Length: 379
Image 1 (cartoon, rainbow, N blue to C red):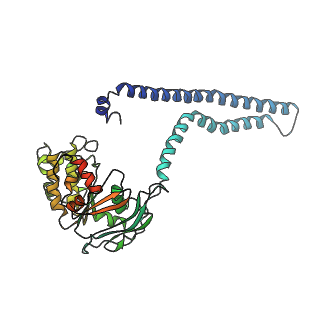
Image 2: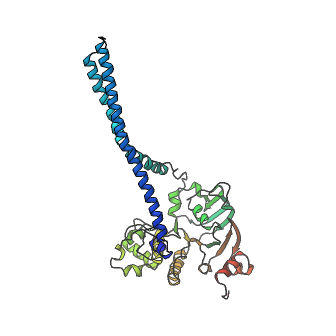
């Protein structure tokens, strides 16, 4: 994190604080390593002493019985027993020698088992969303959800989105907008109520089939260390290069890609850190365009780009959203004036529904949000 965010560290003048934190962590690691080595070095002499002492005891006791003339003990028996005892102690010595490595492996295994013990997603749905069916109508009925038991995030949420409608979800931070998207994608399952697509409960739909019918452009753009072509093709793995280029043109990404020396073969590094935020956003939208979804979700799709790039994105989105059910989540209210319906959320509830002008006339929560963003402008 410190390396990736070195500019932020420098901008806030936190180099010395970070250096001190690094030194403290390094010193703690050094002390722990020295302690482990001391234990390791101490174990070998101790085990050697125990083995030699055991050997001495066996020989002394055997010699005593031989000297007494006991028939059960002979010199041959003593030699055989001491030889076997060395074979028995050798594995113990080897384990002691590997003490540090064993401790390291135990610590690592704890982290590995944390991942292994995670419960896999349950996919009990068997229904498939037909390619020929007019998929797109979404209905939320009395939906309740909480990340932590007893702390509801969504409460009695009700909303119907008709096929082809463009719906905007707005509200203050923490109102539950992004959570509703996560529930629709079944990243989480609801506690109560139902979410239906064309009358079918999404819990009865195969997850792969459900998610293939929905394209989502996330607020935090996720790209892979691969070429531009393959990152766009992630929306449709069997797409041809021509289809990839066409998707880039629709999303207004083609121009900046063509200006690059290697074009569509340009490789992204570190999740696209060699591209600007706006360029990464355009690539993410191109991927959604290529997927040709029945339902489109834009989660803060233009919140991280400049005004010019936002205009390019909006032009692409107009074409993409045509005849598709679209859910838009945005804090920049200028991007959603043309939505068929604006749904205002507050603390997990729907508090207002209407078009832009209707909600302004009510002078409720939407009006106040709008005023905060455009204070001093004529509405």
